[in-house]
Structures are given as structure tokens and as C-alpha cells.
Amino acid sequence: MKNLTRREFQMMLASGALGAALAKTDSAVAQTNANSRPTTKGQRLGDFKPFVFAVIADPQIGMVENARDRHNFAQVVKAVNNLTQDVRPDFALIAGDLIQTPEDSAQLSLFDEVNKSFAMPVHTIPGNHDIPDKQRMVDQAAVARYRKTRGSDRFTIEHGDSLFIGYNSQLWLGGGAYADEQFKWLDAQLHNRNRYAYVFVMQHHPLYLTAAGETDQYFNTPLVWRTRLLPLFEQRRVTAVLSGHWHRNLSGNYRGIEMLTTPSPCKNFDGSAYGYRLVSVTSDGFTERYVGVPGTLPENKPS
Ligand SMILES: [Zn+2]
Image (tube, rainbow, N blue to C red; front, side):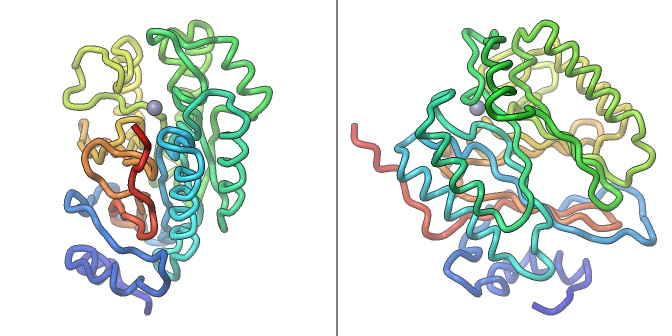
């Protein structure tokens, strides 16, 4: 595909022509979600170098069936790897729930096997199926085990003029000293906000589903931490919060912060295709869309 201006890219996104332009292999774009729309925010930056990144949420190997779930995750990774030119991601992010059963070695092996096939750097965070909780109280011993066996449960990366921060939202579920420490760390990461054009934050749980003040439930972030995180992100002018866990396609805006929840390659409750979110960042803001991947298998779990 030839180099596109931002306007041409947006027009192609709007018309669906992007999918056709990308359809070079069997893993190229086949479906797009009607809820996708361009988002523009941020300041104009003369020398900003545009880039693209991909977000995958809840590969959750074992949620339906190990081999089938591995296949779907592999198809999605292959589709991301096959993106070219203007939509080639510089890196990928995985928003937690790597596997279904915490610490299950067979599921972890399948996840790792596919995760290694990314053709670009990939950064992951854990979800509630990676570090378990009981009645929304995180198992603190499992946090320590995760860090020991899987490595860090958070990351900060700088890419171009942008900052990406991922962390462990299971700690917001009664994480005690772990949660306090993580909040301080997050605050410190955001301290030099003004050095960056954009700041993207990723945690497994959406902060909220329909209203910032909604009551706690399985799919959102406990109010006790939500009421600290939202003001922090607003004050630091966070560009977007990326999440998963909901197994549905959800987007919203909280006082200028985009809230983007990505569906799963494994199982979705809103009929979303199995796929990934593609985010294109330019000097004018960013555009994003959720992309379904052909060759993924439907659920066929025996009852
Ligand atoms: Zn989850």
C-alpha cells in the first residue's frame, strides 16, 4: 500500500477500503467492527513520527478448549505480524488473562509458544486468570509467585514521543501494601508527563463500564482505587486507558481520556469477532479500530 496521508487513512478507515488494501494474505483483515471510529485529541507536534501498535486482550488459553484457544491466539498473532507498511505495528500489547487457569503449566506453555511468534516486541500484563482472587481479594502469595516465575507484572516503555505504562489491576482487589506501592509507582511514572506527546495506560480491568461512579462488580475496578486513578489520569492528561476483561468491545471518554476495552480472540459476549485492536498514532491524535481475524474458530466446547 502506498504511503497515505492521515486524511486518506481516515477516509479508508471510514469506507472500509483499508481492509481491502490489506487483504494480501489469508490472515489479513476480514471483518471490522461497526463501533470503530476515529478519535482525535492531543496537540499538533511538528516533528512527530507516526506509529502504529496493536492491542490483544484475553487470549485466555483454556477458556473454551486449550488447542482451539491456542489456534485462535496464533491466528491473531499471525494477522498482526502480516500487517504491512502504514499499518505495521511497532509493537503489541496484551491486556491480561493470558490463560484460563492460574499457574496451569500446559496452558502457560501454549501461551508462551504463540507469544514467541510475534514479529515485533510484545508487552504483557496479568489479569484475574493469571493471578487469582477470592471474592475480589487478590491472593497475595500468587502475586509473589507470578513475579518469581513469570517476571514483572508491569512495564513502562517510551516509544517515539509517547509513554506506555502497563500494570497489574488485580492488585486493586484488596492488594494491601502491593496496591499502595503500585499506585506510588504509577504516580512516579506519570511525573514527567510533559515530556510526552501521548500517554497510554493499560490495565486488565476496565476502570468502569457505564459510569465512573458505578458500584463495584466483577468487571470493573473497585471504587476505592477508581476514585484515585481517574483524578490522577485526568491531572496527568493520560491519552487513553486500554483494558480487556469485559470480552466485549467498549469505548468511552472520561473528561478527555479515551477508555478502550478490547474483545478477546477466545470468547466474546457481544458477538465481537476474534481479533485485535489497531491504534494509529499521529501528530493530530490517534485513530483506532477493532479488527476481526479470519481463520479463527468458533466455540465448539462440548456441553
Ligand atoms: Zn479477566
